[in-house]
Image (cartoon, rainbow, N blue to C red):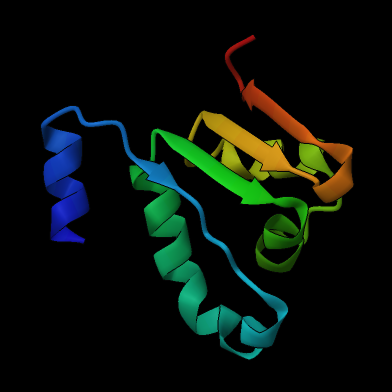
Length: 92
């Protein structure tokens, strides 16, 4: 985590992809604080509909934006065959 803090101090662009899979659901409560801390240090969060469903219980891009926006304003949301959505939550 010190590496990420240094990157933030030096104005580097930090991109975070949680890449959370179903087989790790049994560890989610233990990992959630780390995931949320990583979201807070990121300039851009990139994740799939599955990632945000597992981590946040978000059923769609709007729900994911609503939660991710508490930590990071820029989200790239991938939805398998449905493509990629991007946005800056709260900056409209």
